[in-house]
Image (cartoon, rainbow, N blue to C red; front, top):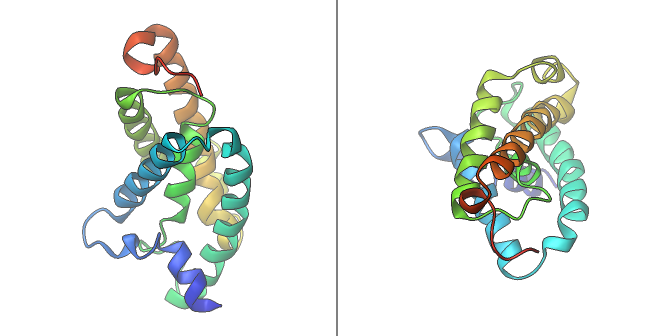
Length: 159
């Protein structure tokens, strides 16, 4: 089970990229959102994301013990989940996805309240929940951008 947890927590080993693994994990999340929407899984987004949060918490907790340190760089399941939440319920175009990606990365790095406090939660909860908070801020930014620039940010095809 440990090998499966590390596989999941590292985003199928994407977290091992030598430069900016969190950004690579966010890119993986963006790709997964795009694929899910292109095959019509948009209606299952909430169910998939809730499951991903709990699977992410479990796998991140196991992976922390494997790596023997708190929130090590190779764990990127939190970024994968974060990208999904950032774009949740928003029919974005490709440019909207880019806005979401940049907004999520910004909030993930800056960690505005209560994200930094969430890092102190035990085990996998601390790994994942701070990114959930960052993603909620990112979701708000994408929604505001979509309101301000709908033809640039929003997709013409509603899912």
